[in-house]
Length: 378
Ligand SMILES: Nc1ncnc2c1ncn2[C@@H]1O[C@H](COP(=O)(O)OP(=O)(O)OP(=O)(O)O)[C@@H](O)[C@H]1O
Ligand SMILES: [Mg+2]
Image (cartoon, rainbow, N blue to C red):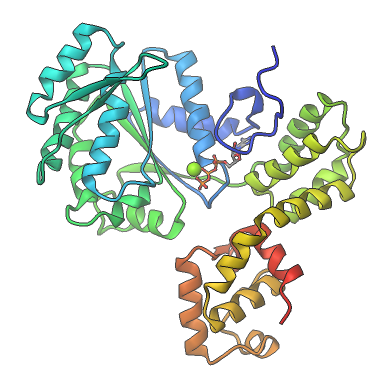
């Protein structure tokens, strides 16, 4: 049975068949968890952190069905209370099969927090939520961890976009989590995040609560040969052939960044314009994607100050800039005074419009970089 129409997935995880390589990384994460280690997964955006977590959990489900795996993405949470709520919804009712007895047990355990159970109209699956009064977040969090601990089950909890906890106001969530996490013998965590500087700071700085609390894995690009073989095989389904030099052209152009490559190949596969793919199809797919994002790019660009625009454009044109404060670069692109460049550099970095890639500043979104080079004239 053909489950999906286009094998080049551009969102989420659709199973091992559509997931390229990452064998070594998958093994590393599984071995770590299996040996009582928490894992921290750090990488730039769109490289495949979330995909890897789902892949690891899919393998664990097959190989160790007794282990309970939970995934939460905390990007949209703004406070410890929302974090606790999300954790409760995703963990509590899924720890046991949703029998009446299990629901009663969990309700009793959380009776202080007036639990409510609602049933999904379509699947019939229960969703659990707690009524957390002001200043009760810490107790309810502790209660969730106590519940996990008393279950006696081995649990792995992935917290995606983990750097978000540093934005919560009030409680020191970092210290709080650390204090619970280290005393649970049956619960291990995967912390994943993309703001590399912040994630590194949280896990490597001796001053921070998570210092030395987990094994850090930096996720890099998928290796080119493995990615080529995977892609060529998937194109064969559409009776299309992908020559190695064409894949190499695309891989180089997008720095081997997973999402961009997936997005381009998804288009080429869908367009099905030729039997043998050439650079022309790659370029056309890129144009298509840039066109669709043009409004967003225009909006980003017009929201910037003049100095930020000038610096961003200069970085885009130069492609990679090792020393943005160097006189030569400043002169070439007629940039303002050094202090202004410095301010603009910080602002662009904070907005994640640029980042350091192999020691040089580049435009973070590769398509945005291309748009700036091709379509902005000053
Ligand atoms: N090994 C892989 N093989 C094929 N596609 C992949 C692989 N890993 C990730 N992808 C795809 O690449 C895209 C980006 O992956 P993912 O969302 O996992 O990245 P991420 O690092 O979590 O990004 P973000 O920081 O934006 O959350 C998704 O469309 C995903 O389906
Ligand atoms: Mg992700």
